[in-house]
Image 1 (cartoon, chains in turn brown, orange):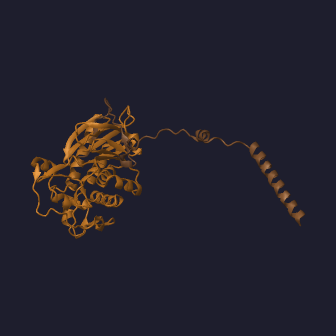
Image 2: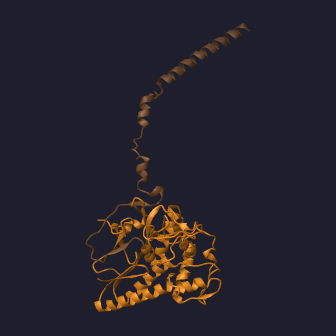
Image 3: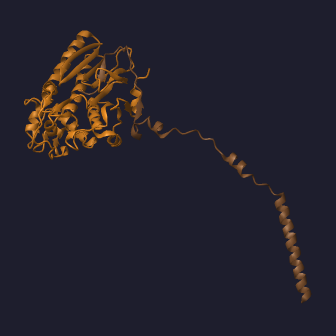
Amino acid sequence: MKITTKLSHYWFVIVSVLSFLVGWGMLAHSLKPIPVSQAATLNIVSLSTLPPIQVFNAGSWNGSGLNYVAPSIRSNTGSPILRSGGS
Amino acid sequence: METFHFRAMSTDILLAAQGNPSLIGEGFERAQQFIQASERRFTRFSEASELSELNRSAGRPFLASPDFFSVVSLAQRFFHQTRGLFDPSILPDLQRVGYDRSIDLLRQQGTVPMFEAMLASERQSFSEMELDEVRSMILLPLGMALDLGGIAKGWIAEQTGIILSNFSSACAVNAGGDMFLIGLPDGEEHWSVGLEDPLQPEKDLTTLKIYPGAIASSSVTKRTWKQGEIQRHHLIDPRTGEPAITEWLSITVIALHTYEAEVFAKALLIGGPKECEDIARTSGTQLSYLAVDHERKIWGTEKSLEYVYVH
């Protein structure tokens, strides 16, 4: 009975030590994790600066589908003077 | 290109035509006669006009002339297309705020008195008017009276253009900013039309390049007068019965027909940006329009940008 108990103790000790050494060896030879600071640098995507909201809205009437029209006057036209503005 | 100016319908008329001068002279004469005859038919300021006769016959069937029936039919169609923002039955409100005589007389007078009953009264919907196309009959509900001012002006400008085109290869009719253009002037790819500054009408804000078809503007700064101490204008908002409070000073619409451009210019100006989008979506008409805001900046739909002259 005593011999059986002693043998099982040795067995557990040997298996535990061997498992520890195997695990140590595996970790020692596995790929190293990238340091946090280096990983953050790699993942940054350069984005262009967005215009401020006021500038974005300047091209349309209150966010509607109407666009700002830059004035442009034509002079010296050969056709008669036609003008519209309501009566 | 020959031109001919005269005054009718309380506005300045310009006829322009290209071709044989003697033929064009005859064309101008016919065109002027048509405008004057149409004015007599459609004015609300003469008791003898067909319009006044119709208004007096409210409550019983009225036999209309073909031209008159055409314009009233168009008015009914556009009342529905603009979801009631164009409504010729606002005449009682227009008179209540002082526009009960021609604009020339109003301007001479300067100020008109306030009436005792200053609140808009209930009125029947224009949709209750009945039309009998077969017999050319119109039945106005009792108490209803119409003002066909703008739509009639647009229709007259277009018909005048068609008459003038019988004498000319390219012609234009401008009735106070409501225009109908046929053909193109020699050497030109389009007609050049100045978009008036609503606050300084002698100046243009920009130049538009318009192809044969129509253009019309509506503005809250042109037909104005004072009633007592209150500044009034002629664009009545049918939802309130009062002169419209608008986000823009003027709207200019480019379309196939002058009466269509005139009606939508009025409806869009009264309705404002929100209604513009809804009407443009539901009217079935591809609307091209330019709006001038209170800072005199011009705003346009994407389609309208192709009409803006670029150096």
